[in-house]
Length: 426
Image (tube, rainbow, N blue to C red):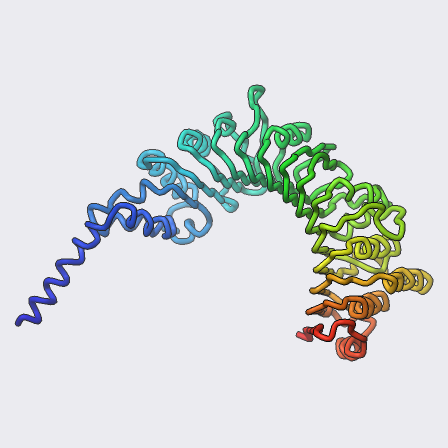
């Protein structure tokens, strides 16, 4: 009998425990839940009923559509969510993510932006459906506290009185339609900007001046881009979609001299081709800060591009990591004379010792002579190399089989007794 009373007492205490939790504990629990589950906590106790209304962080995305009633259209579900947010939420909203890439219609967005602008929004992510550009309302430009901004598939038209976002630290613009002259103005009017992402955004020349910029990720037409006054830039990624035709539109040495603090450099095949003008034996200035070089969708079958890539490897004396992703579909296989010239360029690395190189990663290796020669020289000229990871390319139309490539690599001399060579057959 006492045992039964004890059990009944335990059950009776449970609601009191939930009801009497401190507000900060309840808030911490609710903030860690997905939005749908956070709203559902309102049934746990009277004290919990409206705690979700104080959430400072909101995420409305595809995961929310997938978990709600499929009998109701996504547009109706979205409208209901926004209605409850606008009518029930109290307090500031510091971070808001809206990702409605699959939603055909976006009602009440203007009201939502106005609401966020009045509630101290600091971190804002807006991702809209492709092909259905959303024009940002005037209230968007009054978000004075914003520090992180990410926009996708938007149309931006600046009001005349707009003076920039004074507290903005991070800016991402992906498939955003904006007059090119305003991009430069927007960036220069954000004095604290440190991280910048521009993907397929510009269609005319822009100048970027950002004295505090540390990271820049660009996908677009390099011919339209100028980087000036970026003395603190540490991380640079360039993917050229301009396919500019003739190689050597801009000298790589002239371009790099603007980035004295650069540590990480990523270039794709077309961006290297864009910079593959006349190169000397090495940079005419020291760039000792650069530690990591990443070449993506790359090919060693074009003389100008291969020369520029090797020039970069030789020009960074404190290089620690090299990553090369081979993709030969961009160019026709090099003929005998061109291959001989490329091999001579690769062999020029024999005069260089890469004293700080520790990690090398090759992906898409097919066993061409320039590829094998480069692997051989990097092993022979890197006394502190710790690991070389090699991932073979796919397909049957390769100069050598995977087993042949592996057998040849195992015979290469290694300057570092601790160097581990990992060849992934699968």
